[in-house]
Length: 130
Image (tube, rainbow, N blue to C red; front, side):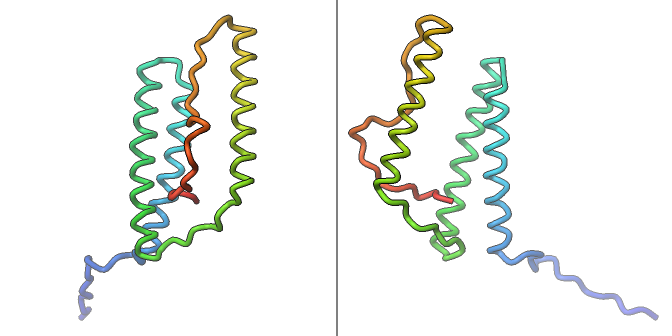
């Protein structure tokens, strides 16, 4: 009658490189979604939970990227010029300072907490550049 086909289940559906790219893209998307959830949360505990999830997911994304780069599965983009990095960093600092001033004017005195690295910190490049 009919011959039964033998299926091998240990054969991957996608090549390893494609699967890794797909997972990497999903991790990036998840970070964006967790970040949005954290910024829109009005409960401090929920906000902290999403912040923790963002950090954990960024760690996974970074580890996967490192493995992909080591196995020549991911080509990095060209390095940005130091001048351009410095310019963007100064723009970010100015924007942050203006935002703090605006908040102080409208909401009263707020503590000046920043998450930016100190100006003396040397740029060493971003190994997770995408």
